[in-house]
Image: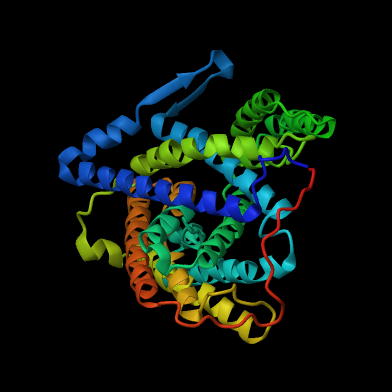
Length: 411
């Protein structure tokens, strides 16, 4: 049990999380806008040179030598993925995803929102084999960006809709993590990968012993990150793996919740804006021709059309067939608006694009497709939700309404 006066319901945790993500999303937008202004205002060479600056950390064979851009994408983003891992574990153990009744609709929606955009991309790029490795780019949703825009609509958007978007995005993140692990892994260094099992075993032992202090977990996680980086598996996955071993509860202490609250502001206001600034700088020199190129068009169409069809279609089928139900006070019009906003790929889409391609021209095409598709999705989603006033909510289809409960579970 928690100490008296220190209890926080799962519903309150969701509201806190949504508020932080919303503000962080606005910081993300500002950082991306500044990068595009810098690049298109005559500073493209300086921008690219700045992020190409090499940084060497370590001594001899133990050194890691990478340009600044990769330190951001492989290093700082590992913290983002660590936070994602913490959020996923919390939601599965104590949150919205701990029962099929609550998880059914977001699971179906997230699957549709990943599969259909990928199919749209492949259909447009079927005759361009060099582009097909980017099939997963439009499958991602940027939760911070989307919630930041939802915050601008205020009370027009019910909290239940924001919570549904959050759940869909978390499941989407799980899918993206699996995609990165299975399809975007370089040649494996089996020695480094094998050694990576040692810190994982150490993290498991700490968890089983009920260690609540964060420092031992942090040190082993750092070792794990280095070994995973050397193994050829993308280093950010070390963050997800380490997060799975942080205990939910040790007696009256809540290590996972404490760490999540400590990391969230840093990730929201430093890590993600820095990533956006480093990766959103694209020169708009090709006009509409650049967007019409198959790679850019496939990504933009996947985000704008694929997300709408995939998420809204899945929700519509699931509710009409009564295998899932809409949340209280949420209408199908609002679900459609949510499916449009889910087309904001941004952070994860840009991240996967950097893994899929090495050619600078392709990287620029990815940025063009992601930014244009995300912008169009944001405009459509805001317009739909702005006019979709919650006049009358549809009834829950199959099961009674349930309040989100704070399940006291040790893990």
